[in-house]
Image 1: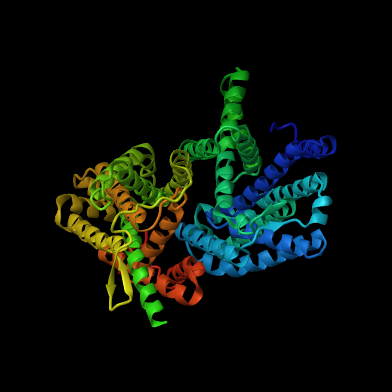
Image 2: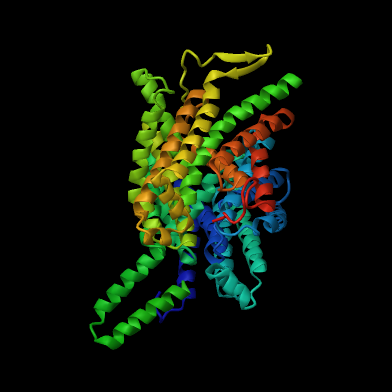
Length: 330
Length: 296
């Protein structure tokens, strides 16, 4: 994003285009793809708050996505209005995360990852035991099913999630989270309450994951209630975040678009090929380009602007400073 | 009821042997290289397929092909190390663990997809003529031969590994490296070589476990994560101290799961193990048999 236009303008343009997309296309396949992208983008953004900002690599994120989907769908199909159903789901998830977070966040580093993985798998098995049957929309809900409302729900959810994430990244709390990520001891020594910041990240991240889950529960016609608890959702979120750019705002969005579009393009050949392609890409990003696409884009942009302004030293230094600023603002 | 309890305990102990071998391999790579290979279970899966195809295509008994499978997955281990993990061990320990977790996690996706592509998603089991035979004790407790092989091989593997680590020059190099790689490097130990071989042995052990899984249980592309989790639970239970402790913890986990399934039903088997894991991790992070200070 160049210096002359503030980032907010870019966001508004994207928002306008996505709103227009829902108004002018009746193409259900396109809308389905868009809804899947928004759901994954919202889920990835929520993971990024805990994993990217606060540096706690959770492998049990799907538990909260699943909880959001399960509660929203059961309350909604039980006759409550959708907004109320989602609200209850979010409150319950936030409370659950606050309770579960106490023992989980005592684990450091790898133990946190493994602990959350264990938690996620335990919840997955339990969900399958409690709700073994497939969940389908009843006939009257199916007759009233329309894409546009679902499209705007998903768009609203991803917009809210990104807005919260962007606000958080600039807030004092967010800065505290990043301090904890860089060095927990040093952060504590400078007066940052590391446990409180990790807990805030954990609860916000879980609640937003439940919000993404709510979209899934509302959008899907029929699925096994265990499915959204599956570890695949965690895996998808993590690959999307890393390929896009961990710790950034735009990274998870770019990653999600790339992931869903790529999956759609490759699904006509072999579905396994898509997984292999993303797996390889993910490993390459972790090894070679830790900043993901966002960092790659900045490098290319910096190289181009350096070449474009063929002035000696002064402008070059400025170009470099600009990329530094650019990195901060995304 | 008594019969059910004893039978469940026996079945649990037998599967616990396999938990032990899977955990031995994982503990080796985690302890020496300080990398966490969450794709360890995928190596178990590939070893299982190797044993399965050696049996169905060439008629070789899975117990006799254990060394062959070990060598195959050992070789795969050197390849994976040279392609991926070699680049991770350059980092400091914290980054090493985090990056190895992420990389092996990508590997999980890739190996699973390849397995689906090559072998389809079907469950495969090796059926030998002794598969249905069992030792029957006191008239009603059945000890199936094929499954008891798991426990026997686990004990043998643990003793071999302890011998290798404690009695050979290479073993001393491995132990030295796992304690302080910089110091080991100063004393003339080729740390890179130690890393590669330790990782390959770890992979080979996963392959051996796979042979036993396809003999006594079943193999499909998605079994990996479950075995990795069990191995992680066992390592947390045992601590990283001793190889015998790991096999013991594996058997203990199997036993607890077996007994828990009597009262809670087999659907909650996996949940019990995970709850045990979280409780031990919370209250005894050095492990049940650990001597403390061996957390990485």
